[in-house]
Amino acid sequence: MLGMIALLLPLASFGDPSSVRATPTASGAEPPYPLNHTLDSSIQSVGDPPLESGLETDPFTVGTPPTNHDLSSPAAQVGAPPTNSDFETGAVTPWTTTGTVTIQTGAGQGNFARFDSSGASVTSDAFTVDSSAQHLVYDIGFLSTTGNTWVRAYVLSGASYGTSTQVGSYQCNSCNYWQTMYVDIRAFQGQSVKVKFDRGTGAQVGGVDNLRTEIPFPGWEVAGAILPQHGGRRQHLHRARGAARTRR
Ligand SMILES: [Ca+2]
Image (cartoon, rainbow, N blue to C red; front, side):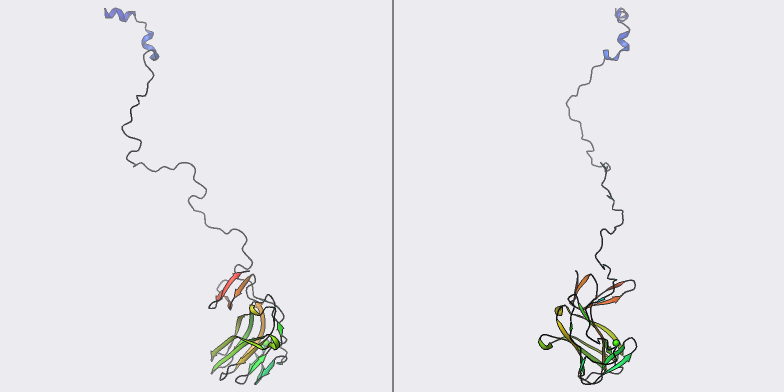
C-alpha cells in the first residue's frame, strides 16, 4: 500500500524546498549570555581619531613675538646728557667740584674725573631726564690698587636742585677697574636734574665718567636696576634684588 502512495506523489515535491520549509519565527526567548559577558575582549577603536591624537608633532611657535623678545637689541641712549658728560673736553667744567678733582686719562675711558681727596665731589650741569629714560647710567672707577674705593651718586632735583636723592653707593677694595652702573631713573622722567658724585670719607681714590640715560632693553620697561649681561649665545637679564621687568 505505501509503495503505491509513493508512486502517486509528483517527483517535483522533492526538488522544491519552498514547498517543504517554513520561514523561521523568533521564539522570544532570551539568549543564555549577552555578548562579551566576561569583559575580556580586546578594546577596539571606533570612528576616526582627531588630528594629532597621538601628540607626536613637536611644538612650534605661532604668531609674531614682541619687539626684542630675545633681549638681544642693544641698549638705546635717550635724551641729551649734560654738557661734557664724558669729560672729553679735557676740563672738568661745567661740572662743579668740591675738594680736589682732576681730569685724568685711562684706557677705555679717555678722559675722566678723578676724586683726589677724601670727600671730593663733582656735580653735573643741569639736564632734563628724557620722558622715555629708564636708567641713569655711568661708569665708576675703582682706582685704588691697595685700599677701598667708595663712590656715591645722587640726583639733585626740585627748586634750585635742593632735593638730593642718593641713588648709588659703590665700594670695591683693591680692584683697579671700571664698572658701568645702572640706576632706575623713571621717577625723574621729564624733570630737570643734576647728578652729583662724591668720594666717601676715608676711602681711596675713585673716578667717574660717561653719565647718560638709557632704555636698557628696547621694547621692555624695567623697574629697578636690571643690568644688561652677555651670555654665551645671547643677551639676557641680570636682575637685582626687587627689580622687575614688564613688556611695554
Ligand atoms: Ca671719558
